[in-house]
Image (cartoon, rainbow, N blue to C red; front, side, top):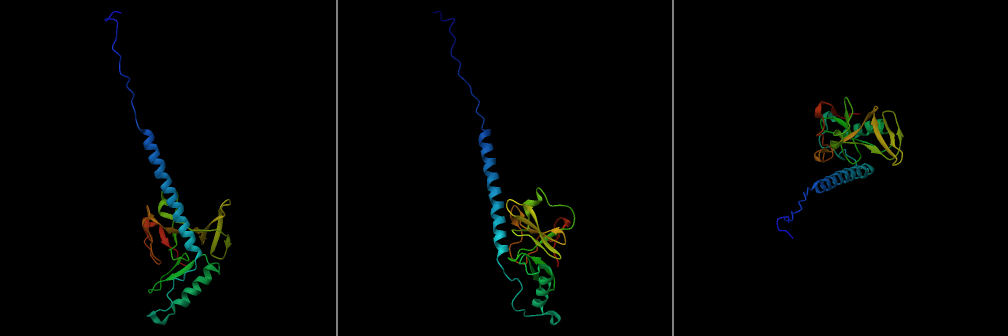
Length: 189
């Protein structure tokens, strides 16, 4: 053996990039977002199936001797027709607006559609049963899951979840989404 013909073994260089870890992290993040949305939707559905009265049982000060409970009841009968899909919230300043039976304020867009990123903050109000009333109806959007979106005066109703679940309506009567982007308004009966 000639020592001049021998070559020193070259180390094998393997580049290891970790795009797999990035992909796994993105998948995990996506799963958390999807399950968060599903959980929030389930909570809203559960809340809408309870029958919570939002109008105070007793009103200490009635402006101009108006019975706020009676006014709310009349508005509710006119809109809901005994279906239990919505409730009417009334403020002391006599402002009326629709809520879910659990108290989440219901909004409508004044123009355009809510899609894509808009749906991160705004959750379509839905029902498991169809309903056709004078101004309120539930239309089928997914037959497999028996999902019906609720419309008022032929416009979809939404609850305000807030951006990434922060800043949305947290308590009955909250109206933090009112006027956002100049296209969202509380739903008045």
